Length: 85
Image 1: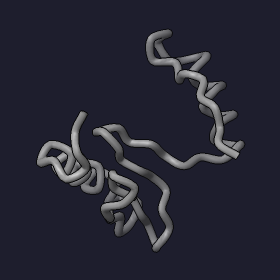
Image 2: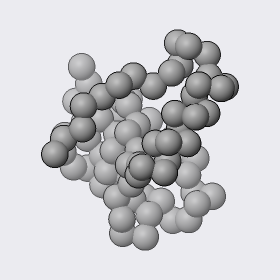
Image 3: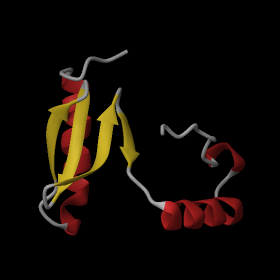
Image 4: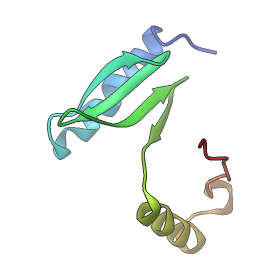
């Protein structure tokens, strides 16, 4: 398991931020033992243990489910997760 301050994770976060610059001034901040990904002051993603997690809503979740059933290889289908309430 990688620490949030590891060189490899910092490189991954930098890569993610660079990829997202077409959306606007995306930046990261270290937090929660990982890195928050922000745009316009709003956090929309989290990198933890070299995995990018994106915040979604019901509309995006429905679209993702529809697309994954039609286009993704079975091994790429999102796994069911429990939501925290």
